[in-house]
Image 1 (cartoon, rainbow, N blue to C red):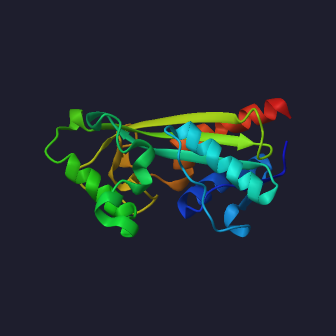
Image 2: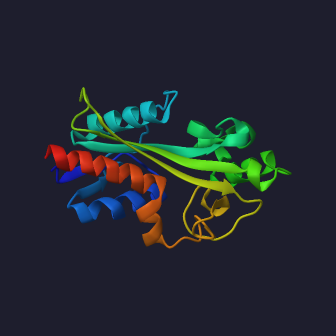
Length: 203
């Protein structure tokens, strides 16, 4: 198995989660921030396409194998929005000031007045590994985490939409869930573990 890999993310929350999940498997994990500060153009129309673009970009910049994810939240009542635009969902309102809080508040506003049954949602993650920038066979792991959108924030952990993502089986929001538990059950954990299993089989 590859011992050193660059994680193609500048998101501190993602980096922390992915490092915690990967390190027990014996990986030496390095953030792309150690090598460069630019970002890949996310021009894909799907999570998988964007993850591949980010992984190839990081690998090209560093000469190392790379892992990238593209993830977001999909709300049934909004025909799957925010989807691939989750990280920049409120950009039409706030421009460069867009952040987790503005995205979260826009989603709450759009769902205002809807019943619990209409607030079903899922976090989705596509995780991609490339051996090198031109790798013709990227390895892909997928994960989906089901929940519903709350009417107000609960908890101060996690990041993104976690404070309004309710998990009925735990009777907690994703922001209230202990970090260790989240790293076992989240969409990102599912996708990373699926990726690691494939890599271990090919080692």
